[in-house]
Length: 88
Image (cartoon, rainbow, N blue to C red; front, side, top):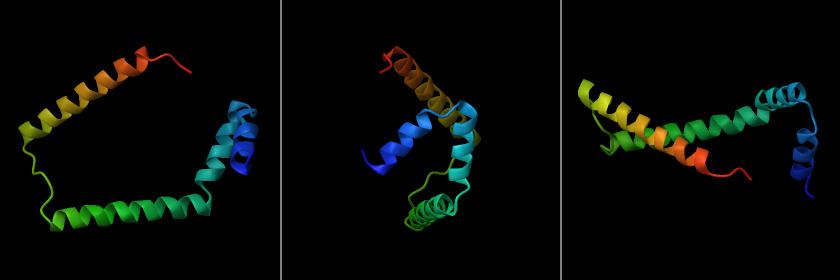
């Protein structure tokens, strides 16, 4: 068992309050923040590059509503599928 598996196993034995405290400690750590910032910078750079290359959509009030309806419909379908799957 590697170190990560040992930590996961130990964390699973903690009570919920201790798990929350452990999670809070991790997301407030410098390591987590640095990794999160690096990912964010990469995503922003990709977005800027897409804008420069003209890869974007312009929305009107009506098309934004259509997009919102589509996102809602897809989300509801995914929830239905997820509820039908047996839990492992």
